[in-house]
Image (cartoon, rainbow, N blue to C red; front, side, top):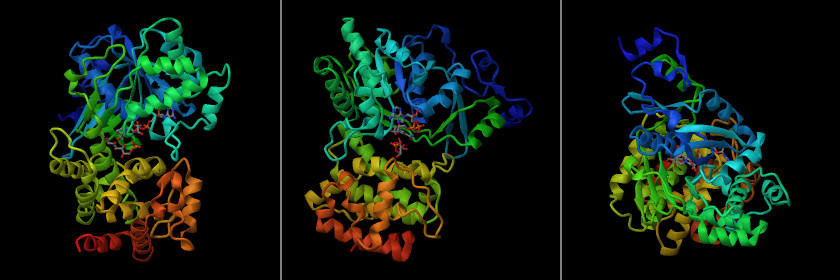
Length: 505
Ligand SMILES: NC(=O)c1ccc[n+]([C@@H]2O[C@H](COP(=O)([O-])OP(=O)(O)OC[C@H]3O[C@@H](n4cnc5c(N)ncnc54)[C@H](O)[C@@H]3O)[C@@H](O)[C@H]2O)c1
Ligand SMILES: O=P(O)(O)OC[C@@H](O)[C@@H](O)[C@H](O)[C@H](O)CO
């Protein structure tokens, strides 16, 4: 009997601490005693990525008996996190990670490293107390790029954000990660305890540095001496994180039940590839991450820039054009030679020349491996996921590439087409006249700018918060307006065809 036959012949087992031992043998599961695991890591943002990445690395260590005191306490800080907290709590923190290989083979493992869950809106003080407790030695974050409240114009902390303003009021009960983390650090300092490390795992250039600047700026507005103490005592290591983790689909839940016999309310699916390059700066100790495959380095910046400007910027390069051309999944786009040429061209001629030397990495091999990863048909990463929150992504990943190439007289044509494709996408109607569901926290603003493009082709670029001074650069605006007009007149596919001759002549 095959795995599927065995699982299909019996009722799927609802996942929990008391049931996981009875799962079919094909399903990996903790071989360690979870009752002995204590949580020294508190994590904010227990989404798909954290569970495919950091929690998986910790699970590996636990499996090897290496980090029993480094379990994870997951915190949902936002009201919409109630569902994940309830689902994981009902499963005693357990969930299934399904790794999808390109040949259709799947591996399923129950991950046991999350041993506590907290829903902050129900009891904010309990979260502050957990952070104040010296048991907490690392606070890690995957709260998305927008979660750092960076003012796009100044690059400084945006104290005008309404939730931040509320957290800054005298005696406020925290509602934001800033409120929680800084209250936890204040309590540690008042008690004369060592602070925890704050470890950002979001896709931001200099993620640790950004977390430091924003957290300290928040603290300074509350209590300048606390900010000084944080500057002196708290570590914020930078890291590069990588594993493509799509949004879990209903079909993933059904297939896990049918093929592996696990009834899991919220499993995570991901690609086989995983990478984590981390600076070794920790205030209060760390798990032996290197024993789980994490690369500990002194300077993570070259790795981060490589990943953000090649992988993440290529996701932007493929998603709007791919969507306009009628595709809905990343693998469909990356199995189309026209798009593959465009992406490789962007990476080689526009992204890569802006990178510093990346120790030990063959960039050409890296670029081709990215195309193979994107083309994995099993992962089913939706273009909708990649097209979301563009205003947090394009300015951080692609605009710096364009600025650098403008300074050095490098190539910009493909990047300009990507920005134009976003501008066209933000018009909210596809090439067949069907509505596009634009997902962006400043959706109204970007869509209003896109709607004005008929009379003013530079309307979209005039948003200096997003594009800085690009609108003043004639070399850039000439290509951008050509690209936008080609997208309107010929559509994405023909524009790409014409671009392939434009960039080679
Ligand atoms: N999915 C991937 O392939 C991937 C890979 C590498 C890195 N990342 C990083 O991880 C982040 C999260 O990705 P994901 O796939 O887990 O998304 P997700 O939507 O599954 O989870 C995001 C979590 O962060 C929380 N969150 C969002 N904004 C917040 C805020 N302001 N304050 C507190 N919590 C907040 C959400 O409520 C949710 O729990 C990405 O934005 C990216 O920076 C993702
Ligand atoms: O998750 P985001 O918002 O940082 O960006 C979308 C994707 O580019 C990203 O999730 C990649 O899949 C990921 O960075 C791969 O490691």
